[in-house]
Image (cartoon, rainbow, N blue to C red):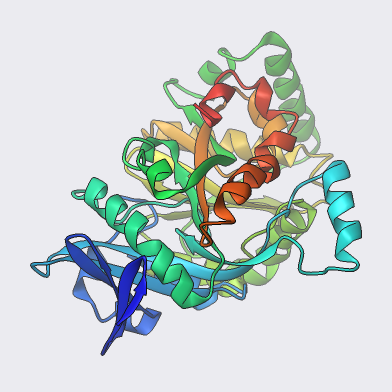
Length: 397
């Protein structure tokens, strides 16, 4: 029996970690898929258990995937929480003088601010607690168990990755467990309480409305773009995947690298939720968007563009118009978009949908210092557009 904050021991299916009122066992992907409770995990989320199976099988990153199964003393499931073990560059996406100074120091100390991290959540998307019925109990158990899990995994840092601000009440005890909360790059949201897209335009500023209509008229006068909606991207993968890579390569912040097989399996295993939007110019696909539809929300997650025509055709705005128009026609009430590219989203009337990171160093001596450091390194501090959103205060409130 090991003593590491909470006790760890071995079982036939992985290492066991004790917490007040129960225990957690760490399983690999093959083991978790043998648990019938796994099929109910994240049932309340757009990205349910099938999504986690897909990203483990298809993502090209060097993540090590594990799953904590937490049970009470009576053996009942408290929750199942995926986590990753990853070697993380802590200054990924930090621009300007700070990044330049760190890069210079790294010429002599290449591992500076690169750490082995236990990251709780989803490798490609926002984080959620799996249980919808016992969230407070699950959060308390995780706060207690995670330091021992991290030490067992050889991780110096624990990060709850991209948890929605709606979990702040449930996770409100984070400071007592020596975690620091900082904002992550937020998603954006738009309430779709409009009759149609023209009605939506009427709620924008005069300048934005005029600019968008001019862009749409210019594109439609000179080109005929056709849109298709499908849940099966397989026949088009060779055509659309380079478009995703073109957008990904332009991003200053990269965490997950999606593969062709990811897009294929997403439609194959989650056809009830996946909607791929394709735009063709003279038969050639020049844009696509990968979305999930769940409840009354459409999640616009990944965009691909052909940059040989994207700027001239204003494809970013064209795709936004068509997806929002489709969503309104389907009776959906919310449009949520993935992080980054905030300037156009600000002008399009979107609000921020804050995401949080909860961070702790496993060393009690280093953690207070690291808690102050992480507030300086968090990426939202360096984005000039975020403070201009009307609800920017929600990032830290």
